[in-house]
Length: 91
Picture 1 (cartoon, rainbow, N blue to C red):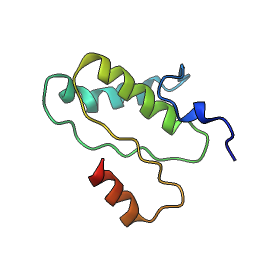
Picture 2 (cartoon, rainbow, N blue to C red):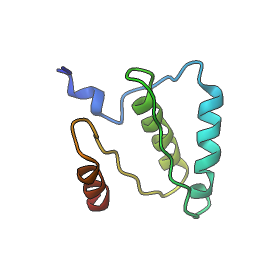
Picture 3 (cartoon, rainbow, N blue to C red):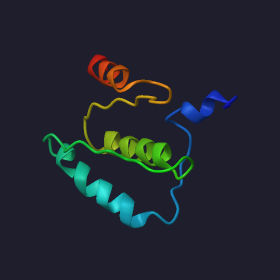
Picture 4 (spheres, rainbow, N blue to C red):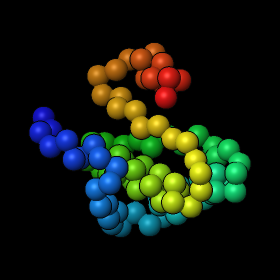
């Protein structure tokens, strides 16, 4: 169980090591948002602990610095697919 709430804070410093190809690919997919276009949806998946959340937070933080974008971070653990979609629509 996570006791420290700071891990859910977007402001924590995140250094993503050895994932340059993945970060560049994600950056290319999000580039349309930097010029006012809608970027394609992105699904990041993988085993626990590989840096999915840290990567998403870093990329969105960088994107928000370069462009006015809307985003939502949804915690999906222990939620059904319908609950996740409902929360995405609400946010």
